[in-house]
Image (cartoon, rainbow, N blue to C red):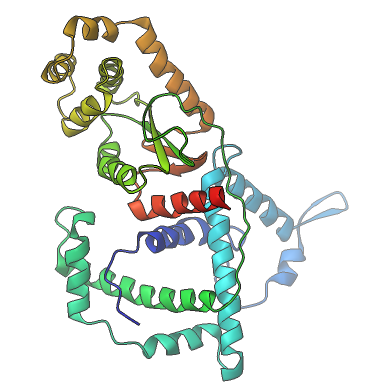
Length: 355
């Protein structure tokens, strides 16, 4: 098996979900039981009484688990995280079953069998680590040197070997996952790229002063380039209250859009996030050759304010409180995700539309 060098964003994303969401949901009180003994008897023993009615520890822990679940996945707001948690758990169970099937004849556990298969592969070399670092350096935080990241990269490459074997087992078997994704109905009002007839519509709620929104701009452009006929991208406004210049920037983009220059103005704002004061918004409009009298009138028009207010209201209804927030055919995706994450969802939706 060839040593992978490309950053596997999907596996990183799933690993983060497993650790952050699932790691402590399997036992009451979140991994509280560190002992080796069987606690089933003590869990059933009464720890309190109301008259003659006993209250068992298991009853208390079940109530806590339900409360933790409700806090992690609040009704109407935790749909995306709940889907990913369930999907990750399904993948874990599928992998366990496949490993058990293949290790049954070898008198080993599934993990022992997997470790043996990984050991048969070529060892990860310094060249592999350096190649991975060089190819993915732009994704790492500023100042993250090869010396600092060598250990985590080596560990990740080892995980990718395991993932490759697991994927091979899946390809050799019949695995069907029919867990439905949670979808919301999202109005597609706003400036857009791509045909209205596209099978996939991505609605982005964004803030021109948000650094993560700026970071995802190249990804959104790449999506538009990869799927010119299959994806429509709709931009909606979610200026956050603690970004002093974000709301006026949103107004400016709407007014530029009224003169058919929304996307050019959009690019200027994200390229100049530290220079979004009111007079600078007018300077950008001037640089695009806009009719400045119309632009200035639009900036203070009630209709402009109402459009942003409507977007804010829609974002609140959908449970989108941070930026950037994406809805891919109604499926929520939060944050500045790698393009691989978008690709997976987009291709699922395209396949579904053709199926």
